[in-house]
Image (cartoon, rainbow, N blue to C red):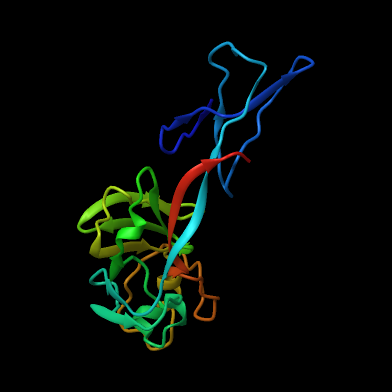
Length: 221
């Protein structure tokens, strides 16, 4: 079995026993960590399980409404024509923002996505640095490492859906922003100056691409 520590999920895995050695193929993602557990005596010398087939259902493009955590120097809300790092924005309040920004968008889910036995997943692409996913007002949890994806099957419905992605970044950019010439009111306070006005900013926010994926019938590797 493979035990996933971040979710508590336990799943059976394929194996092969030969010449006193047990070989277990693992499907792992970047920054992944699992426990391989030999809990019960094997009933056969080999077991080959199947894996779902992943297909791309849609790419979520176009405008996003983004609202920012108050009292952090950013405007209450902006509209992004396309996903980009906050650090690339021309508005200084957005450029140097550190905190939580909420991306909101209405998406359409056609009936063809809802096949019996299939799962629908949201893949956020690149996220700096973690995100909470909310579908139709229901929080599905937080993703904090690659791949930044979540099973949204139970929360999504046919037709119109409201998608919210609450992204929280690091403090670096705000600390740099507070060192800019002419800054009258600093938002942060540190006992030591860790960054200078010309220190490089770090990518922040939802960078994408954001995709809807379908996991369908299982086939052999």
